[in-house]
Amino acid sequence: MCFGFQNPKIKVDSVAIYLEKNNSFKAINYLREKSLICLKNKKYKDYCDVALQKSDLYEKFNDKENALKTLFEALQIADRENLVESQAYLYRKIGSLNASMFEYTKARKYLNKSRKICSNIKNRGLHIQLNQSLFYLHSVTESDSAKYFLNQILHFSKDSKDLNLLFSNNENFFHYYNSKNQNIIAKKHLDSAYAIAIKINNKNSIANSKSNLGYYYMTVESDYEKGKKEFLEILKMFPNKENPKIIGSTYLNISYAYEKLGDYKKALEYSNKYFEIFEEVSSGRFIKSNQEIETNYQIDKVESKFNEKKIEIEDKQTRNQILLIIFASLFVLAGFIFYFYYQNLLLKQKNKIKDIDNKLQYKIISATLDGQDQERNKISGVLHDHVSAILSSVGLHLSAFESSLNTEQVDELKKTRLLLKEAHDKVRDLSHELVSPLLVKLGLQFALKDLCENNSNSLIVFDFNSKLEKHIRFDQEFEIKIYYIVSELLNNVIKHSNASECYVGIEKIDNQLHIIIKDNGKGFVVADVNKTNGFGITQIRARVKNMQGDIKIKSVLEQGTTINIKVNF
Image 1 (tube, one colour):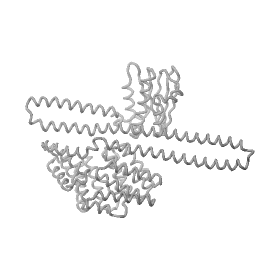
Image 2 (cartoon, one colour):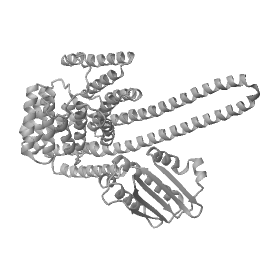
Image 3 (cartoon, one colour):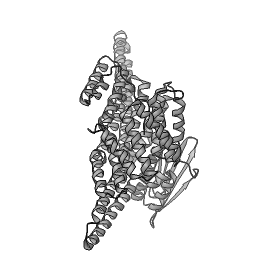
């Protein structure tokens, strides 16, 4: 799916010249030198624009790790210099990049940040880019909001004669109506997009149109020979494989066409080519790098604020010391009074620094826990999307060789297929253990009810009560965090309370979600647990505090424990 307008461009067209000569190395080096010049001259907005170009170039050559790293480096400077428009562009690009890597939760987070900034910016090109990205995200996640963002694109591109934008809009309409099985109108927009791509003579746009045309032939007309022909023509357009993203998806579609045509050998050949070109992605290396880059950015941001506050306090302390020395020299008789004032001031300042340090620790713990949660979600996604695909590819291998086996070998093949099915089922079960499928599909209250039922047994009964509306849903990232908090607290009840009954209740009051967990167990001394960081209380407090929430724990020995949590949603 296309994304309309490009990122802001620097004035010199040297990058385009290098790319026309197929010299990506010189293009990257030119942008690096341009970045250094912008930093040296303190032209920070130009630096962010160059970073967006450099990220586009890295993404074109499938180096998404450097693309993301470049964006976060620019985002730190944009945050520091309060470059609002640059922040909006960077957030949009980070969100779009995560969407292309199936990181839909992160993509939604950064695109919503960009959208919040854009509400106060009058920049038609930026609004079109952002709504293109949001339309893509909601389309691939099959959200009903896709039509809304499509209409937003049309609103901001009204009366535009930009052929690239017209091409993008027709591509969007094709994808939308194709997803709704309105094939006639979808084909009309596909033909219009292809005609515009030929007119502007853009190789990538032509390749996108041919890819959509091949997809239409195979899925709508079931004409796999015509579809295969379109995809093979795309490969001829890129003899040097200079666009790995397009080449990879083309390999996968050709493999599918050959499979439907019964040529399993050719299907395997192109399937293997696809896995080779996306080996880095399917291995999970980029997902890990993505999490490390984002976590480092969050920690650096927190530490930067801490250091600024610390310097401010130290400067204030220095000024106070100078004042105290001057007053002491003028008022010798009042020396003792000033001495006690000075000691008291130092103590307050130390307490402030200690308080800031505690807040920093909470944020670092929360950032680390969020990283673990997101890593768990991504591992589940890799197991479900990539490992399952590999197991299916193995099944394709077996199908390709079945015709050449004798009766005895066919029996052995059946045993192999049973083992393969068992492995596939275990991968699916492990994916569900990492992330509750009920949480993703039905929402928080259904997932919590299932959690209580699964943990109930002859020793302890968990009673769940929800006062929420039956079909209410919250932001997915919010629901995942609440689910993990409640899950950790229930584990504490099972492990440490010796309780026979535990009540779990949730309700919405104003703009807050209230959660209560009450058991009839042996209880504990709350102050002692806080000192020893027992039962994971520190980690739970950090999670709740980072969500702008509040947690209160009340426990009486031999009378049980009550935990109240209030979180803004």
